[in-house]
Image (cartoon, rainbow, N blue to C red):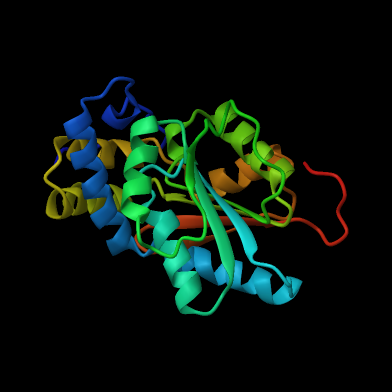
Amino acid sequence: MHWQPLGERNRQPEWMDQIGIDAAAHDQALIGLRRINAFSGAAGSLFSQIQALAVALELSRPLRILDLACGGGDNTIALAERCRSQGLAVHIDGCDRSQQAVAMASRHATGRPLGGSFFQADALEDPLPPDYDVMVCSLFLHHLDEDAAVELLRRMGRSSRHLVLVNDLIRSPLGYGLAWVGCRLLSRSPIVHFDGPVSVQGAFRMDEALDLAARAGLGGARVRRSWPERFLLSWRRPVGGLQAP
């Protein structure tokens, strides 16, 4: 392993971000990411926040959730299955700017009780629907520069009726080591082997994520550490709040 300085963010181009990536290589990478996402258990940390919201709201309808930049839909589907296994009524949709990722997510969801669908949309460019109770985003924030990250959080806060959840990597020596080893153990994809450690170099620390949320107008946002060396940023719209950030 070649040590990389982690004191400051070092964003580098990732293979998965490239336009026109080879379809077979893209599919192989998404399959590898599916294993990594299953191992990380991100859906569990998201579920606890969503369950608490459902209890507080006492809605007579399913809770509506949108997973932004959902990639191959692994976390979207895992979260939907976790909610249903716990008796929580939800409608979960996922969106991504990549048509190929949306197609793969849709295939993966076939026959599963998702209660929603996948569609193509750019979380930073296209209008976000205003009719979702919860806006979720996993492992996308580290792909963005600070201004774009703030804009994404601001857009999520404006569009979400109640709750914003962001799950992402922590930039740390432990996170870098886990990414380097884990990506090689859980995937054969050269894209994943390269992008995993590079993603950690471009990730935010927990205090930096809170600062982004404050700049986005998400006052009172909270951040906590989750397995494996990730953070969960959460923001709840104040009760009776009529104006979005």
